[in-house]
Image (cartoon, rainbow, N blue to C red; front, side, top):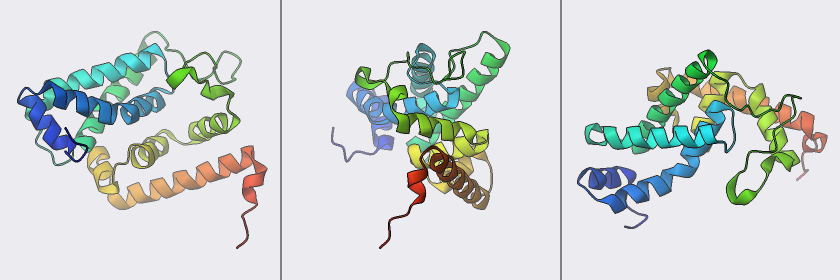
Length: 195
């Protein structure tokens, strides 16, 4: 199974019974899907994020025979977005999940990430998480879909049901706010290198 096989072809092979095609799909998309879920729930690598990611893959497997779209990635993140929003609504009504911040308002340092690395100790990472938290919910979601998950503006337009030009304005506004927030955390970033 080569890297040149599209996700859409892999999905068709999975529907036909090819378990290796499913494994390749999951391996290809899990890192970005997990990041999307973690950002959507405002949690790092915690148990709830892992569970929701598995729920999304389960929904994808169950819905695979009905896939008719042109872009697997847009379809996958559409399912993910729906389940993340549903989980957040449930969280508002039900028991609280672990937040990114501890009771003292400081970033949590007890959520493990890849290879046991603790990103909360990294100042640049804390600044980035803080900057993302300053964005409005819609700005954060659209920015993450575009810049982290790699969806095109047209795919986001279809997913969110908003005009492409508005998506473009939201991305630009979110990037501007991020730059401003990151400069506030690191004044040296204000000094542009001269050419």
